[in-house]
Length: 439
Ligand code: PLP
Image (cartoon, rainbow, N blue to C red; front, side, top):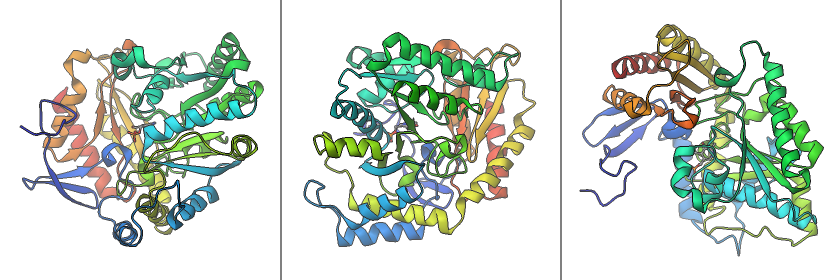
């Protein structure tokens, strides 16, 4: 019996002992091709010498200096690199240790902005159903993953939810993408009006939805309309790019493809690429100016914010992305993966949709293709696919379809950005076999 509380409390998973490139090896010598980057984390693959050396060097030079006393060179350098490539208007960084922490900090930053600017009545957060923003209480409250929320519901702050932008499931057949995006933006505006625009702090959304719905990109124009609605009512736009950011969709930030900039953006996962736990909140000058003119401090903080070793890893990751021209590979291999998935699984009567952007792809499985009816969650199809894939030496990220009874099981693929064409072939073939064996 293990003393570790594992994710599945009754089962101890294999013990990972080493990893290199795309492959993780366990204690029994079994090798697993990492086609999910864990959960969209390992964007450079494993054992990248440049990041390993940066971590080693920083740990031996300055491992820790509390941010209540000092800043550090890696923190300053990483912030400069991030701001140099940030969406328009974004020019400040607050470091965290991961995605949920970034979302918590983003919610508090939005709230504090309104307190500092004499609008303390702005307290409402609006987010979307079929979303995931993390497992801490604030992040869970804005998240729309009912299964994760349910046990903690009495502890969660009030948050409001509108429809996600999920064309495969919710766009009417006769509706154009533009009309669908406009309908959703209208729904958001109606919710803001219902709550009272002067009471709404922020709208929170994943730019491309990750874990809960499976690599769901927005329809064209949706976020431009959302941006307009937020601006009309003085509501901040918080984009959660913890999973979809840091190059995963083919541009450094997924929102670049939407032609808009948020007021606040959360990143994590790919920032440390699994070499260190690190996240960040990127935010606008306007918010910084409010802090500077007001209390002069963000009333928040954790012991390990801006950890020098984590920031050094982040610097090495960003430099590697640029120098190895990896985003180009993300775009090319993403297109190849989509076409190989279409060819291998597109005719399967239980494959409802294959979608995504860059190296962020998902296959949605349905009991009936015509009606898009979901499998009974009791079948635990997602767990069976995961097990079948692991048996074939493949790591993918399947999730169950439990939200609103209107969302199928899906398998998320988020391989490292270093994959080549033959890796894509192997991933798709093993996934095809695993899905067929599980169905
Ligand atoms: N936000 C999004 C969009 C995520 O996908 C996740 C994790 O999957 C989180 C936040 C939470 O990140 P973490 O697990 O690092 O706390």
